Length: 257
Ligand code: BTN
View 1 (cartoon, rainbow, N blue to C red):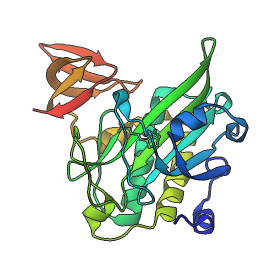
View 2 (tube, rainbow, N blue to C red; view 1 turned 120 degrees about the vertical axis):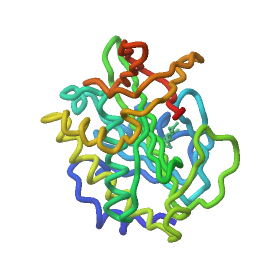
View 3 (spheres, rainbow, N blue to C red; view 1 turned 30 degrees about the vertical axis):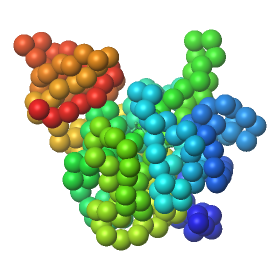
């Protein structure tokens, strides 16, 4: 049971989450918000679903989450808000908001994995999927979807990275309303920062990504590349150093070797 009053009391934003839509069951919160229906026009609209029937992950994967135990939600940003920022940075602002919220509320160490997985003890606790709808050549709407495992303690299926939840890591049941409000409060602050000083967000992201400097392999379109995770560039692309060259990787899955 998600208690709207408890969420509302904690929400301190001006825009993000002020139009809040709660639903029991839906295909995917990302797909729904991107559809641009009447209820979903307001900048900062947040759609939370207790259960997604076809939750989506990166690279056409699925996102499975047990009903009512975790958080699966999406945030809508319209063209007015995103025109002032580099949209590649939004993934970083969102994943940082998740780690900042977890660390503020639970004093537990988190880590970021490029491009935007949130890990605790090398296991994945949250994933982020950003999607856009375009009109002509212009982005009309952008949706940031966040799946965060909170109170689920068993996971079935095959995973690239072993999944975990905050309950598994802390032993305690998590108050979903509180952490959702915390994430949205921080995300709005990060959005302001992105329009003024995006380097601060990229630097904070770097400091939470322990893989920088390590030997990694990246699978990009079925092709595996190996090298040193040199850095991320100003657009958030991964810079892979191998054979004395630095290659820019736009998409891919990273693993340690
Ligand atoms: C990933 O790690 O592959 C990204 C997972 C993103 C999952 C969230 S859950 C809410 C939103 N709606 C979706 O269909 N996907 C995202």
